[in-house]
Length: 138
Image 1 (cartoon, helix red, strand yellow):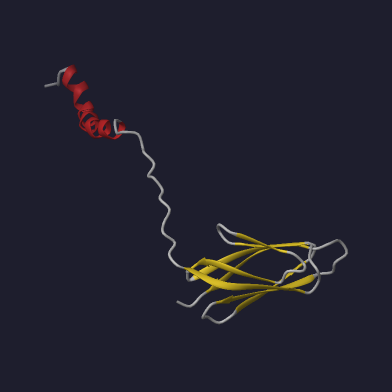
Image 2 (image 1 turned 90 degrees about the horizontal axis):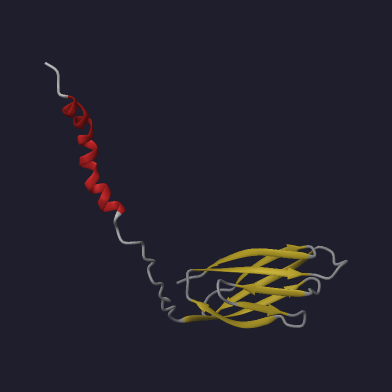
């Protein structure tokens, strides 16, 4: 005995019909709404002295973190800075030297209040961009 043509056509479509309801739920959802970003309370700031010593006079030198940049001149060698009390602080140092300056070194020293000093030596020629990561005590 053979099945009717109508039953033979509808039987393979039954699984698709069963998937239709969940698929309609997924497709007809409300559009994605981006969550509102609220600024987190940073909490107390850590004070520190940031000292620069250069082997050769530089044209410009900038030290920056995620949201703050400190600029140094060749006459300036120390700044008092403040930044959030995180376990790690990442500085990006950008320096340029005048033409005909040989390879030069810059010593960056971070002196956080109540913690040991941290320092790092950078080497560059004409231009330098380097990221430095200091780990602080809690």
